[in-house]
Amino acid sequence: MTTARTRLDAMIADLERNPRVELLEATVAPPTPPSEIEHAVRLADGRLPAGVEAFYREVGAVRLRWRHTVPELLHGDLSDQGLVHLLPLGEVFGDWRGVTWHSPEDQEYRRVRPFDMFVPEACAALLPPLDSVHYHYFGEELYDTGYSFDAYLDRLLASRGYWYWPQTLCRELQESTEVTAFRRAMPVLFADYDDALFQPAPH
Image (cartoon, rainbow, N blue to C red; front, top):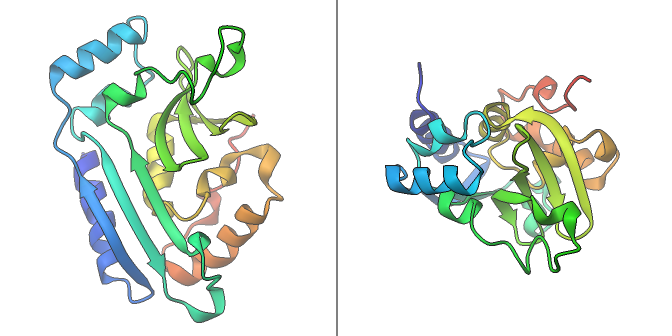
């Protein structure tokens, strides 16, 4: 079985070889210490969402940033980039007061635990005790993708973190500008693009 670390390294190597892409940053931190995993389990009321512990036993955090160089697709801004920021597990289950929630009455977003903070204003998040990954635009939107943590990682690797790609998994956002741009650009940038991966989960 191919490990998460091996798959991440392969994705980074693929970006380095791709003539349509300029790799700007690629950092994979060492595995998460067992004590930090145990602490996160306690903070999650004794159970991490499926797949989370296994991943963090191999990887501590990930920072990835690249931009494409295809003239007919360029916008000259951040939407030309791929961005991944998988947070350390201690941060995921840390205190998000003032970020995802602001008052004790704010129950809707209080359980949100961002783990892929790909941009400052939006993220992919866990909502324990649920096992499915959610897309969260801070303070405004929260959508259940219906995909597990492992299924999200499969798609993250295939997307290489291209601009706002998690929106492709949200039934409510299929007509967004970001989703339209993703479906147009990805087949040009990556020969192995499979659009079937980037669809809302079946009910």
